[in-house]
Image (cartoon, rainbow, N blue to C red; front, top):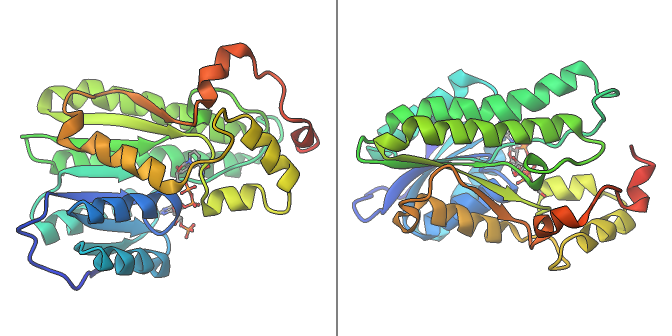
Length: 274
Ligand code: NAP
């Protein structure tokens, strides 16, 4: 199902982008950042209400929007959203795969259905967007960005499906970069550490101590604001990043700079959860 934003007349737009997970968190921040920069934006989310709320904010910023509702795990839903965005705005320049889900549990303990759901959303969701969006981009060029995670480049305890799926996103995007770079389509990963979103609120619900332990792992001593991630996405899809392809851009306050200093033990307050 799709609905269109009120503002038409896109002659002044600097580009057309589709963003999954645009109803919340990093996806919402990305959609708003792109709208503010003059993009027409297709907003895709599971929740129509949440996507409409983003669209409303984007219109305040002067952006043109189209809302599409569905599940990124469904190629049919994603195809429809991309087709509707390209049809509404006449072209497609960029696609940003933000939709993703957290999933707790070690590889031994996790329910197989939860494992499959993590991969369906976090990996198939990115694949579905790439398969729909890249062929819709003009031969002159385009840009694809997927949000992976620090868990896509390092191991984390107690969330095997999340870690494995986010590593898969990095591999998938590197493959896209190699396969489509010669056609002017650049593909990159943004890999944040913890970001102040609804997902992070759920993960640390009721445990300020646990949250504090994880903040202490970040050299900058805090989690990211979603806008700080969105601005990197906006840079990567812009002409400013015209020769950046197949890159994994850490937005982690320096967390992974300490990777080789050793982080083999989780914070004490996390051990009981594993
Ligand atoms: P969030 O706050 O939970 O927002 C995710 C948005 O995506 C929500 O609007 C959600 O809709 C939507 N969504 C979830 N599953 C979907 C599906 N199957 N199809 C379509 N839309 C779906 O998450 P976030 O923190 O912004 O995370 C965005 C991405 O960044 C994810 O890939 C996540 O793994 C990654 N990431 C997050 C962090 C972090 O600390 N937050 C760190 C590193 C990487 P509903 O609310 O209706 O479910």
